[in-house]
Length: 461
Ligand SMILES: Cc1cc2nc3c(=O)[nH]c(=O)nc-3n(C[C@H](O)[C@H](O)[C@H](O)COP(=O)(O)OP(=O)(O)OC[C@H]3O[C@@H](n4cnc5c(N)ncnc54)[C@H](O)[C@@H]3O)c2cc1C
Image (tube, rainbow, N blue to C red):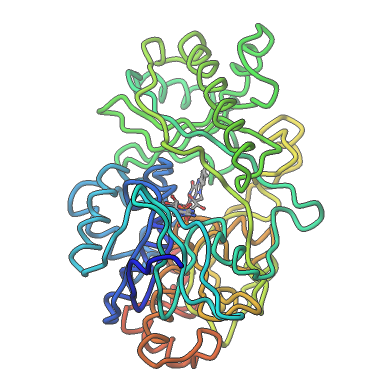
């Protein structure tokens, strides 16, 4: 018999942007919340993983995500524009402050090792840390692990990767370079447009607003490859979260294909391959890229970036058509915005990303649109007592290209938190929760629930 370490109304597994938003929303609605995280900070991929670019225009942010961004902006840690770049260290601190101010109990350095089931009803989870294995019981559990760890262990039906063959998007070890003459780099970018992507989503040069994203250096990469500098899967060099005055930028170029983020051996192989690519990229940058002669590796993510693994199969599986055709759902729990073109750039499991062959088949129209996410996508089939938020919600592979983005994960996180708080208070199962009651609670949090509430025509202007 395992010792029961704690009991709580709402248990959140995972402190990424989804788990953070869930915990903040549940606590704001009065629930007792415990958040368990295997790392040493909040933010997950956004902080420990260094993905410091939130793919939404600031003017589309609402409710809990907006609260977080506004707090960060006030502290000089986020830069609002067509996307929102954040200082990931500032994000760690602000997230921790907001969670503790709302009395969210935190347990770091602790992994979920198993689930506590009563038939098909999840009662809690088994945690493992330096102090051994213990059980934590909860009225409602939110799986915000990104990989659907709890749902999978509880026996919920899951999908993984691409619908046809389960292959997953590539992994990326994100790292920052320092010692970069950003001015020289920008001069090259402006003077050589043929060297860069035509996709407005991939090229942002808002220098004053500190929202810079550069995708290309195609010719220099090809030349370096001919001289044996780089690896086969490298077709471009991509940077974002550029801070000109610091001479630092985030390199989002490493690509590792054919690995599964739920298999420790695969993730280990990916971490090793990530370091190999990182070393080659530094050498390439120093020798070929204008402004990079004295560049160095400033730091790297504490965990390789995993774009895709398992997703639950809920009572509704969101599709890309739902998203781009503007489907309306009676059980909508939030609105996200995006400007991805379905025929535009995407991270395919097949490789060749950014190669001439890939680029030639793409379309570059990028109109902003909004879409709704139904509550049914957060509820796994068969298992009670569980709500899923973030990357592992119920969507197909193509729709995951939108819902895995950080702003969408915050929207589903907030909804999961609100739903869990209500379920605990009203003593109902998540799948039986009255949607109108949930929507009213989300309105209390200032959430936009209908796609037209963001008035996209005005937002596009
Ligand atoms: C390389 C890369 C680039 C990206 N680029 C962008 C971009 O430009 N813009 C954008 O908006 N999005 C981007 N994304 C997508 C986005 O960052 C993620 O999909 C999103 O952050 C996922 O949030 P989450 O909270 O669902 O999961 P995560 O951030 O993965 O958080 C899950 C948390 O749970 C913890 N955890 C997991 N399992 C356990 C366990 N068993 N026990 C205890 N703790 C556990 C983890 O440590 C982690 O902190 C990118 C992702 C990657 C990897």
